[in-house]
Length: 396
Image (cartoon, rainbow, N blue to C red; front, side, top):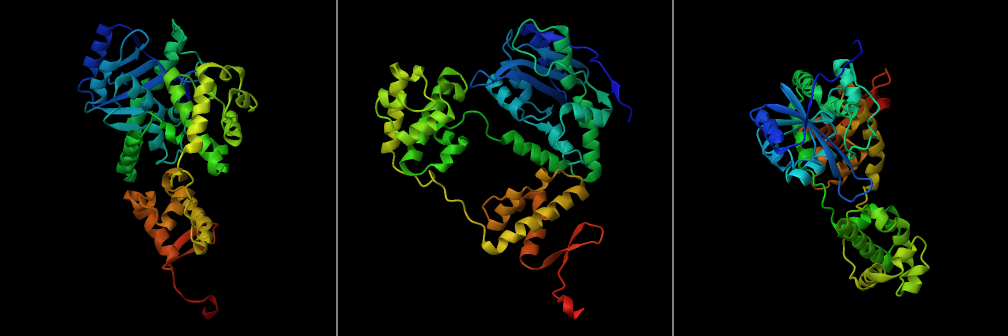
């Protein structure tokens, strides 16, 4: 397919309530609409929405959330139209914060691409692969919160949605031909319903790798301080690392400071924490951690996979990779190593026990580990899962 550069045919900047109302009116009754956002979160706890791009059958608008309240867009998100996004997870979080809701119906083109042999491509790669379009580059890392946005920035942003409905149509046709459209819709529903934002402070410690190496009182103190940091970051809308570093949390957990002087000696704790309310708050978190009653979930003991089944993980993983190549499905979408281990452990809710994966992957793996099936090389370097003959080789 020839690669061509195409510029955005037209867009309008929406920065007033009447203009937004006109866009919402145009979107009513649309079967599908393309959606994207530009946002920043490098210097804040919550993502800061900077631009909303939306395209429909005969229009494209760039909505400026710094100039107009986009909450009325919730009517469209809650409506019957299919929201088409690419790599939607962070966009959904931003939209939920800004509009109080996310799309009621979602089609993620990155997810869909993984079911037709394209792995998980970037938007630019997807446009080039499906439409032969090469988009302009150069503004991906622009400051979207700066105003005014120039025409080059607006054109770049518009390009993210102008062709997305065309891509959606082609992907749907391909998926229908392969009998996989429902698989994608089911996977997109998982993405749509995934919990995002509003992180639980009591679980914040799990995102600090070093805390997992701590035990007993040290771990409980680290959990308490990490929870304080998470709450403080949300209250002040700044990144958690700007409140207190991971290094400081681990150091505090190991030394259990009880006074500002002791806190001063902890590596990673700077002068701003040595006086005033922040010092008192950290020390209170330390004391609370030391008094904390150990909870069963504090130090979860991972279920060990049966020793007899451990060799099966590598074997099954090799077969899954082969199957993914043959079916032109991204391996991560078909079954990860964690999925395989969860199935073999009989974990409740294991992904390979539900839906299309159960039939395609879960049931064959079950038959393999129960001795009803066998893996064999085909002679061409590929693996095949076959019914087991139960005939020893020396009897051939």
